Length: 350
Image (cartoon, rainbow, N blue to C red; front, side, top):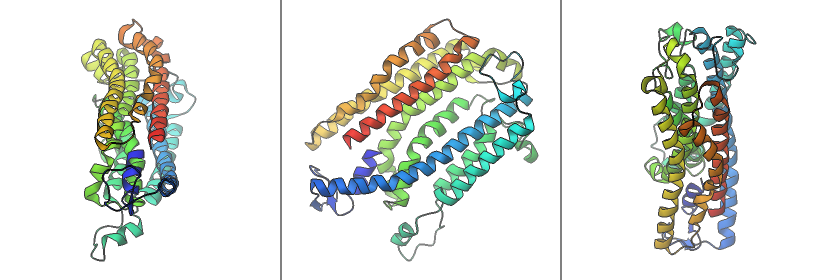
């Protein structure tokens, strides 16, 4: 996140050119500031790759376990209207699907334990000799372990939770899937890399982290909205078969009209966030006397033409069942382009 980079960089002895606040030290020259920014960017890149690998493995394992569990719980039958599932189609046995899930979970655990959870020794030493706390990051440990648990708890089923008496636990079947997706595929997925940078590279004190991550948290909201919109159209499509399998998604609990309205609010809300960023970014830059580059927060609006056919079909159209398949993928593509445009905006304004 460019805001985090800017704030942590300026805490290293000099302020950014044109800054009205900051460390209270000398003003950086433009060359020094650009060199400092390049160094910080190079430092965050491996952290972002490590977190992306972890998140990708969690995503794959969740999908594999969902493929297995929906089949054994009776949600995926020959009447399924969604995209083809490997277990339901007989391409993989339930055992083979679970084995793939376990391998991905083990890979995610390895990445988390080796790269994400351990604290940077230099940051620990910077706290002082009186530091008696753990040499691992408890917040990142919670993210890693809860992600592993949620990967199998999203759909639940007899494996592996059944072995510890939690076979009846299911995030998706209880109607909490939307909230889960928003938190983990929106907020956590977005602030993960900036958090790692703040704690492992910048050695930011814990009490300063909420302030530094606030811009990242704000930008995670529209990403979470669009991630949730994907699961909403998925559940809207499957609600007629889900109800027979006891899968009480929001679309089953409150009906198709509610799901369509939810989809509309999530997609439109993601663009509403851009307007919010534009207004308040412009106000902050005006108060600071800095050059106005707040227009970069509006770049995601270039993806809005992609959103129009999705809104027409899902929120206002009469499509249902299998006809909604293309809009599950269409919403995912919309989120990808939106995120790319947001990233370009952050790069330009950094």
